[in-house]
Image (cartoon, rainbow, N blue to C red; front, side):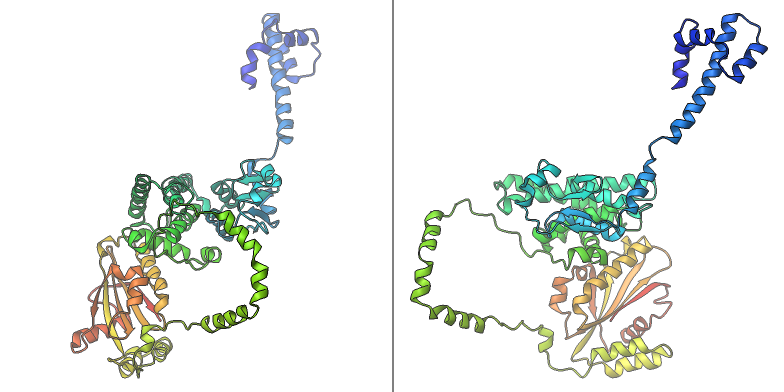
Length: 507
């Protein structure tokens, strides 16, 4: 800034130079030194002296200005982070998927965020008090000590950045850019198309078949691109959960629970694996609860309006008391009938209806877990002593797409997610999963013990990973297959001539 001003200030005719010209005693050791050293023309000598004087004065001003300068943004962030113990108030409903973004981020950062009490969509956000915070009444909205913030992605970014060096926002410039890239992708390519599909189906917009087809086509295109990326990546950016994963998962959550059935998402197995892995992470699960995929797409709502709604209401208002006086005993009788019909027993699992077995699965699991030495002599022998071939069956499985297992940690996470989703069969199954090979591509093979003579149908239906494996029933009359069972239970290495990268047990 000073350099740009020098031509003006140091012109011999300028007011500032004339001032110094007529007051030669202005204190400056630089100007005195110049006068003594240079014997050139009077104007040039005095001008150079003024230049040095300005430099000395400007340096002092610069020091003072820096001293009184506003705090650096890092200082502001630190100040805000130190105040995170104060709860931020999030205005949104308890089931708002856009609010879930901020609540999950808060779980990861340790920032205290509380939902506004008694919030009612369509009522609270139309009040004058709310419209002062957000003139267009959008939800969610975050109240902070520095003022309100709206737009869900902006709110999530703010909460994430309250924590210094937060891995949620990346550790490098390229990570930051990729996180922002996937946030935009999730909002523009996934969420926007899900909403376009959702609104007409739930009666919030006019249903137009061509518009729905266009939305579904665009959504499938986006999910296809995401599926390709996740084929070799556990998370969207890097090796850990980031803000991008939180926002994209919340967008997918809306689709999985409202519109996207199993038959729809099965085209994108890597997206399915990614989604179910994340929603079952403890911090996600604390906010989302137990997530269940929708079983059907809602039908198109009828365009016809109910006839004469006002008359129905007026009749209901006119005659409730008369009916209550005439037949006071009826409600009690009806209530008694309802009470009798209400407690319907839950249908039993078909496996519980099988004939009793001599093998107690929990006894085998206990023996497996407690055997630390002489495993083959104790655990393996004990298994065959307990095994009931009529009540249980053994199955080998092998991953269909082993050529895709080129990254070790992605392969291990894939297997871990499968075992996590098999939790519904824990009462009826025991399993061993081996990741085989010292170099990619890695092979994934397993051994499973199931109650009954077939793989339980409910497992095949509920756990989509089952379709990703080839299943072969063990022939116990074949000694080679029986020995292979022993080796897999024991985690024998090398297994089939190759090293084991890892072995996981489901029990």
